[in-house]
Image (cartoon, rainbow, N blue to C red):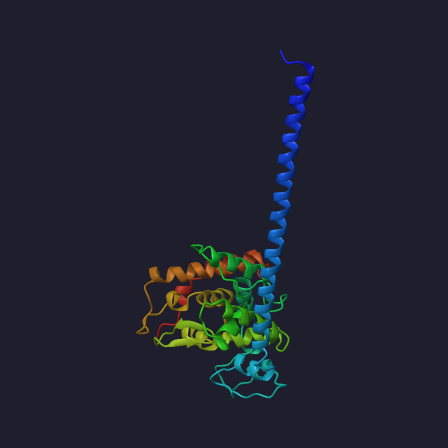
Length: 299
């Protein structure tokens, strides 16, 4: 049986060993945290330097040239003065294929914002949370990635930059998007976008670009008279215009079973409009049950 002195010695030794390991662990944790902080500062420095070079490079395109590129449409004069009111320009009768708010159903812009960029009227060109989500999906190569681009970014990508998927291009897209938001109004941005995006094929089997051509080409009517269901259908095509298009390359109407996919997309757009409180439940129900296939323009 151990004496009291032996027990005290054993206890002291155990405490000494415990104290030694705790001090070592504390030193390790402190060293690890310091190492991580230094690494983080180093990475942040590299990122700041990288973005500084991107910002400097993006400034090589002055505001005038940036606006000219963003608003470049085949039917318009490519060199508009700096003080151009693009909404007034788009609202003019000529050219006939360019449309402004006075010539487009308000359901069209509501459908576009609800389904593509719900924060369009409040953000400043980019959504940090969407960019971070897209970067995460890109890094981990997720199976079903979601877009991280606002309508403004999509406009920049289509008009100013290439479609290559690089971080350099993405950084420039962000810089230009934030700049253009300080030059053009929200309406100028969204109607420029609507006048140039592709909507698939029309009843002649021709490529359709812009909301006016899409409205006449698919429903045989001006965009001003589009109802809720038709507006949601057209905007739904934008996600994948040549996959969702209801017409074949020869201009013939696809079988109803093949058009169901674009109608499902239309229902998604309508649901988003309901969630964003842009339409009532009654209007949603009527639009969902509207026979789009029967109203497609088939010469």
